[in-house]
Image (tube, rainbow, N blue to C red; front, side, top):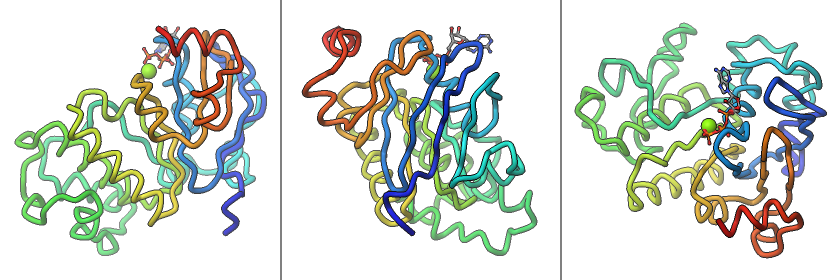
Length: 234
Ligand SMILES: Nc1ncnc2c1ncn2[C@@H]1O[C@H](COP(=O)(O)OP(=O)(O)OP(=O)(O)O)[C@@H](O)[C@H]1O
Ligand SMILES: [Mg+2]
């Protein structure tokens, strides 16, 4: 598949909290989303897998309007990981098998391989998730999302509750998933260093508007708007 192909395109998308957002995300690209608290970053992610609906504008996934894709299928293709892992009470294996089991595809779910993917030992299969550390839980959450074979991964402050070492480990895992699985990643973060380190493209959102968008390295080196420049200095 063409690596320059847009996997997600937003055209003039508005909601009660977002104003006319237009941008696209390429296959195998990491896009970081930054902006003040309440800017609308989480709202944007919710739109992409239809946890919210736009009041106007269109969103396309691989050229297809997401309104025309079954929500269950869309949420497999565009997976989401939140700040807290939202695992259910059970073992790591049960959590990872959740999506495939719902779809009657349990035999296709290779838990061993998924644990490998997030660098957790096989012995974790039978571990109860409540006995895992925050970083381990977050890795189980990523494995659970990957059990659905997503092409896009949405992360909402997925590492903000973790220490630096654990955060860097998860960042390495994400980069490997991008390289090996060719997923596109859209990650909201409050950590500007992380946004710069991880991003290829960055979106800066303020009060529901996309104020600045560009290649991450260029944006952080030479902000084009006073708003983003000021935000970087705060
Ligand atoms: N469930 C809700 N009901 C009503 N308003 C909401 C709801 N969730 C968010 N909002 C409002 O939508 C706007 C955008 O919120 P959003 O959560 O997307 O911001 P954010 O950029 O993710 O902020 P943060 O960095 O604090 O997570 C805010 O004004 C917020 O108050
Ligand atoms: Mg948020």
